[in-house]
Image 1: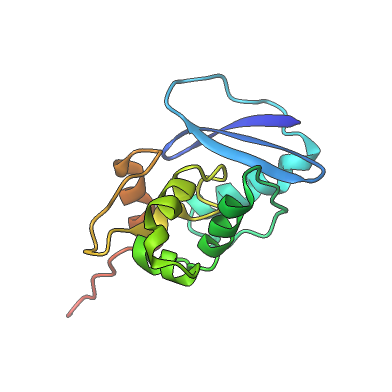
Image 2: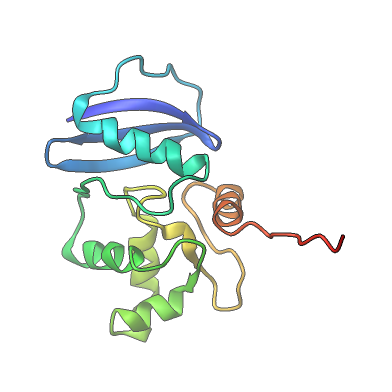
Length: 157
């Protein structure tokens, strides 16, 4: 398993993976030393994350290899279906997975998502449209949603 530390607008971020794919992307709340060398298996992921943050990428195409239970992987796969710039409620997500009553289990799996941003758990909100729990902090969730769907003010003149 190889890893790299990069700087994003939201924090230092660690990317881990190998030839089988990226298994973990997570934010670090402390300052750490940036990597000077990017392992070959992680170059594409790092490049695509950088493109995302500068607004040039709306989907990721590098190979994913998250570790989790079958249920968690099913939830994460469904998260990948939420389009860039859109949101989905926890209840809607539970219904898409076939069990509206599994909302807590779905929310728990969402919170254990090991692939920050790429598997877009930040796009899941409360049924009332409010921002609900986010492992990286609600301020990061708000930033990501605004980044993906900036309010475009039209000029009248």
